[in-house]
Length: 525
Image (cartoon, rainbow, N blue to C red):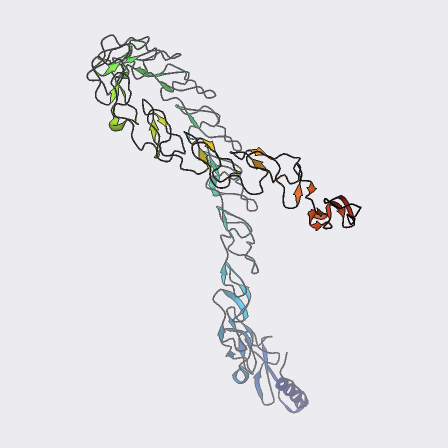
């Protein structure tokens, strides 16, 4: 491209060529290596300058940051192409540090190796080539050793051999010794002698001594003298002293003097003092003064004071004044105060002052007033609760409530019977009879208000409370209260007959007349 000035100059040279002395020279900075002297132009590069130079003779260098600048740069300061890392018309502005080239401070055209983003602000992750997509950071080649994923931002599992895994899946190419799984993420069993199957973890070869199982994760019995069977865990040789069983994992009885049989656990020698049984695992009674029989644990000597029984394992009562008989446990002397019977059992808790007859156990001072959740007691041994509804306790011999019932709905000697719900108010706490009769309009009668009025009563809720006979309301009569009294008729017997009628059915028809009258209206005398 030529500027307007260069085109005008070219035309001038052509027009004046016949009157000028033209000469051709070698000029190294001219684009074609030649320059001409023509008219007023001396050593002029007719076809332009090489990159990095400007001026008529291309003898001036462009600024260092310009690859190609304007022929007339001294005047217009225009750079046509900037070097990497610079921008603007004069290439005087610096691109962001991670940009290789840019058009502005906020738009990189190309990033330096190892960066991506609109202004190359993000670093590529673990890319082997160091370069990644400017748009999303995806590595353009393989990942560094030990990483995988599109952006190589995931670590391969520790168990991968050479820290190498497939870029797309993260699966290890091979596992290190002692690891298994698709990603070599699991460790082989602690007891594996060498390594284990890549996919299932089963140990390849035998387990280390002391371990068993397909993955060698289980320990052989503590008492195994050497190794155990890989499949079953059974010890291959004898058990060490003090253990028995197929796996030698059970301790011999603590009372064994020596060791025990591997199959049964029976002690090979007798038991230590204080133990008995085939396995010497059972202790002799605490009251044994010496050793006990190995087969059943019975003491060979007398019991220590305070103990009884064949094994001397039962304590005498604390109420004994001294010791007790070995076989029965009966106290050999008298009981302490507060105890009774041959075994000197404690007096019942209900006894006042906890005192009772040392032979029979009957309370000598009577019963406590309050005992067990504030319920009083009675009886010879003060071990029977007073009836629940007694107001102030009960007679200590008979259990009869002493001051009546604490509930108005109860009656009887023991306050264990319920008053009739039809009583008007309360009932007599001795007899249960309703003190104020029956409830009004209740169809019951009797002194306990527990009998129903006869069904034949026209008004079943009205009967005599003593006899049960029907009680008629005003204007009614008859055994069933289903007739009007003389002189009344109609609904509810409220209408009055003629004054001369004794009984009637209507105002104009008399059934019977008063003395001295006759006729269907009793109007004749």
